[in-house]
Image (cartoon, helix red, strand yellow):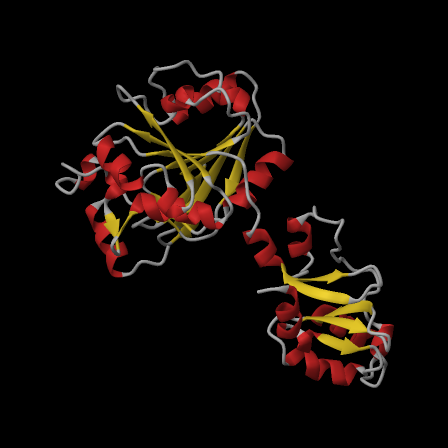
Amino acid sequence: MDGVVKLEFYKQNIISDDLTLSQVIIKISKVKIKTLFVINRKKKIVGTISDGDIRRGILKYKKLEVKIYKIMRKNFFFLDEKKKNFDYDKLKKNNFLLIPVLDRKKNIIEIKNLEEIRSKIIRENPVLIMAGGFGKRLRPYTLNTPKPMLKINGKPILEKIICQFRENGFYNFYISTYFRSKKIFNYFKDGGRLKVKINYINEKKPLGTAGSLGLLPKKETKAIIVANGDILTKLDSNFLLDYHNKNKFDLTVASINYNYQLPFGSIKVKNNHITDLEEKPKLTYKINAGIYVINSKIYKSIKKNINISMTSLITSLLGKGKKIGVFPIYENWGDIGSKEILSKLNKNYKL
C-alpha cells in the first residue's frame, strides 16, 4: 500500500481544527483506530486527538461546544524523511497507533500504522533453533521423524516456528540437528523457499540444550535468540530482544506462568493452631518457556563439542555474577511434549 493509498485509507482520521468537541466525538466513533489528525485551513497538521484527549476535554470544559483546538495535543510524534529511528515501545505505551508522515511544510503525505512499521523491521540477530532431540515421548511418531518435523495442520512444527520469527523481522537462522538430520536439511535446504537464510549445526553427538552454541561461527557478533524446536508461541520476539538489550542482560530467559490447582483443601497452621483454611488453592509458578537471548560473549565462551544443558549454563553464569533476566510471555504458548498435545493442536490450532 503506497503513501497516497494509505492517506486515502485513513482520510476519516483527518479533521478540521474548527470542529467542536461534540462533532469530534462523532468523528472518532466512526474510525477503527481512535486517533485523529487535526489540520488547519492551509491543510497543515496542527495537532492530534485521541479518545483520552476527548475525555480530558469533557472533564475540563464540561461542555461539548468547545472548539477542538483547545484540547488537541499540539506536541505530537511524526515521521519525516530524516527521522527513521524511534522508541516503538514508548509510542505503543502512550497509545500512538497511527503515525503521520510530513513533508517540509508540515503537510500530511502519508499515515503509517505503528504495527505495520514494526513488522517491516529487519533484525540482523541470528536465531538458533534446537532440533536435534529424539522426541521419545512422542514415539512411535518420532521413530523415523525428528520431533520438530511432526506436522500440525499439514506443516512441520519447525516451519511454523521459522515463519513466526520471519514475520517479526528475523531472517538469519541456524538449526541445530542430530537425530534424522537429513530429513530437516532436505526439507528446508538453504531456506530460500521460506525467504530466509538457514545454516545448519550438525552435532556429531548429543550436546544438550546449550552445547551447540559452541559450534556457532565466529563471524556472529550479535546477541542470539535460542528457541527449542518444539515450542509454538505468538510472542513477538522483538519485544524479548529489546527487553534484553535495554536491561543490558548477559542472558535472558523467557518464562510463562503455570497454574496448578491443589486437589485438596489447604490448612495454614501456627503453633499447632489453624489460622486459615483454603479450599483447593491455585498455585502459580514461573516456568522456563524454552526461548532465550544470549550475548555473543557468552556463547563464544562455550567450548566446542561439550555436552551442556541450558540449565547448567545459566547456573554457571549466575555463579560468575552475570546478569540474567526474565522476560514474561503473556501470548499463547505451547510445548508439543506429548501425543495428546499434538493431537489437540491438530484439531484446534490457535498458536
